[in-house]
Length: 278
Image 1 (cartoon, rainbow, N blue to C red):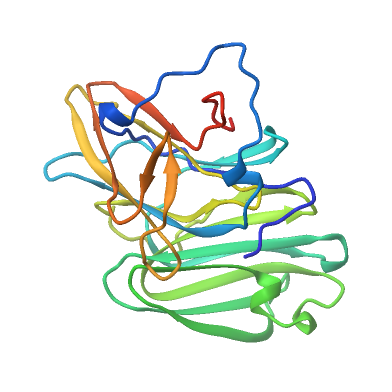
Image 2: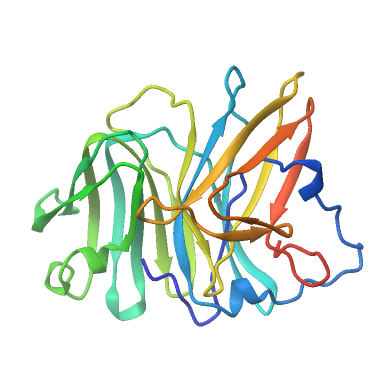
């Protein structure tokens, strides 16, 4: 899913999470004005997904995902979602008008341990199937992100199509949807048509850096005890995703966190003044 706009898009991942003390940095001066960040606005877009895994006997931290729009270091719009449990079946609302840039993007990440056979189908408002369903396989620890206009031929949409996008999988997968109207966008809730048990990890199916997209991670501990764990960032093929946050680079090793009771911490790509994009 090529998420480029004339204004630039910022992807903000608000996960509640922290690094060891050596990697932490305090807030910048209050008067600091956000500056453009080269890794956000000056390089090509790279995408993948993020997985938060608590250490043994530790609970999951709280987490949310915030998307936004940035230009010249300034955030222009934001939208947020909460993590959803992996599902085997869901249906998303669909409203596509190619001529005015109205589109829907979907990202799917598979952390189930086995390959996932996916079927994606279009239906109009009357429930009538449109075009031929798309079948694909996502290997374990892999991800894909596409606009629906990249998944289906233009003939499926014509001048406009309003209806639903149905997704079925042979194993539970994590899904996020985005509704675009030109450069503006909003998140789409992912209701589980078939519920699954709560997982032992948190998976956000889309993580991006570059091409005016960025990701910021925040972790919060709501408990009365110290909690710890790790966050891995992967590319679409499940390989480690190299990213530099708070001056610390993640390559083959994951970021780790250890939070005191009710503690929190922000992890972000920062500008020359130490300011995060938002």
